[in-house]
Image 1 (spheres, helix red, strand yellow):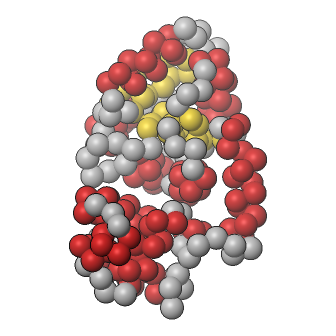
Image 2 (cartoon, one colour):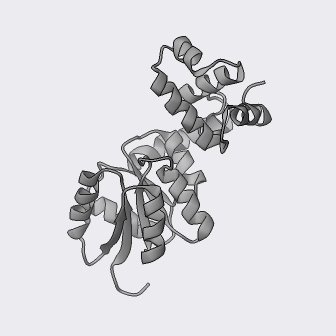
Image 3 (cartoon, one colour):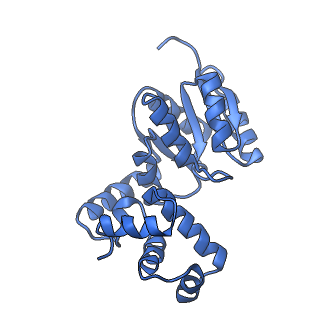
Length: 220
């Protein structure tokens, strides 16, 4: 690689986070340079196409219908060599597994220091898969347990335990309102879980989610 800073595009729906990351990375100007930024997946795809960065650093959760995971899939499908690192405030192994399945080359937590973040970006740009050190050990144990089938139904597809519970009730034919009552959740919370299920199962509606659950053998 020529001796120049890595060109980075940042995607995050919080302006303070974007500005904080830019300020943080500016301290390492000889190693990384932010060439573009975006606040949602659609704009992120346009900015990446315009600037063709060495690496994209995106939040997992973004405002609008598409998440950072969706953006990652879109970028990698368009250009398989595109390198995307996902940043998150959630140290949940399921998000890590979803990120890797989406084609990301890294999953890092937002509270990482500047030097460590830049070092991981450099490693990811060179072709390594980088995982936040605080998660690596737990992720390895969880992966082994997933392989052995020791988790809840759907865990191997990236469903959280709560999402698995919601899906089981969808399969049973309950409405969102009934699911909220059964699980003692708010209506908006149930809607959020259902929307997440659709994304992970790659379906568009309730019937598709039920069909996917039965096809994949999540619930019989």
